[in-house]
Length: 626
Image 1 (tube, rainbow, N blue to C red):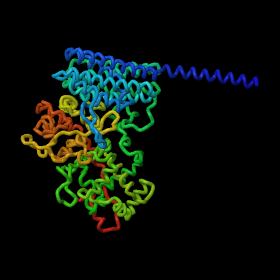
Image 2: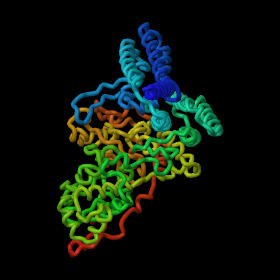
Image 3: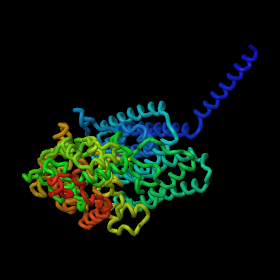
Image 4: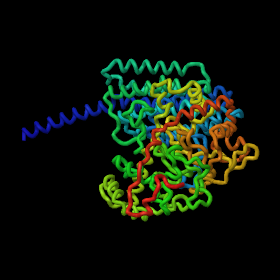
């Protein structure tokens, strides 16, 4: 009894000691400091918005309101990294575009809220004080809800660093392009606030560093970046290429080193960005598996090799003459150079222009109207379409079973020689995802080879990301419409594309885009934002192939899209303002676009097709006859 009593008492002492230790760990340390910082910045946002609302209530002059708006935004930028990473939906309500939205499967219009809406009101030529107060209060409610959520949120060291590193991508892709400050053009000053937020997060881990050199290099590079952003240069004149190459990329490398020196591992789950890479321009920095269905990730290389052969084999079509490669030709960056591809029976053409398949794997939706999410579904849709390939996946599987060579390839890829529709889809999709083109001269420039681009091309990039506003829809570094830094959504836009290249008597093209698929009013004339990588090889342009040259494309945007040439679409998402680009500036943007050409995927074609014991099938031609 006495012995038991002694052990019981000892157990209680140990338990109390453990509890005390645990209590100390949960009330101190980096994560506690991070959480306190996050809440503190949210409080500062609220305080600035309170002042803004009060000033609006007293009808003070616009400059005063704009100053308090700018303060609130800077405090928000300090906490942008954590908010965007942990609560992306709440982030969209706080800092999303000032555009009406409608979900594909919900007949409900989502009214925009947040800083971008408020910016339009505060910087309006005709200031409406009541509206400013209303939008300010709406934003405060959203921030208050965020604060309540932060209190119950659980942080991890890995996530803190992931959010910090992705914030550098946000600054590059969204911040300095003016994406979230389209009226006030405060993006450059706000980029500094974003970096200060990242610096604040890393400071909480300073005590964990054992290498003083990393700490010094990190803080020195931050000061250098701040100094560059502090230069008195207006929005259009800011040299984004130099800022990314000489400041953001070195910061990204140092933050990667800092994380390792602080002994914080990366998350083990799959993300769009491969965080084992130190910058966003390294080969392999984007995980194509992130965009694939879960059951088709981590496949053997043999699967893509099989898909390559299937892609060029007309056996999948209804007449054994047309292949996927008939409309997606490697030498044309997997387009076909036609306004619209020739229809299966040579009677007319298909509905839309054939887009490039290079980097198609880095999207969350496929087809111009975004009617499917995965390439697997796109494959079966195209093969079954009577005016495209007029095939039948199950019938093709039976044909393939008659080839010993194909049975062996399927066995090697999938471990079984039974050929199924699912395996065919998987193989073709895997091949298409292998068509990566992220090693252009522009990429090489961003990896440190400054001689890879001419000054004209560098200037073109700066115009693309600045004055021309191209980068607010075609996000660097993928330059498509998949939204960084989490890459969970691929955007569409309503541009007002004309039926003919006529700027005098322009009429909108009759194709109503996403409306046809989803029957939602805001989706009328909306089409997926495609990549501009390899644009020099993919003419003609737009969903209807209306523009033959990049000069025509840039001219269309320079005029303000459809609205600028007289097409009246109330739901046009492209700003109707003229860009006022000179002919020289337009040529410089095109020079930059040409620097995005990457030919490495173009040679990824088979040298022969598997044999059949069938004279009719043995006459097949690689890539089909069209």
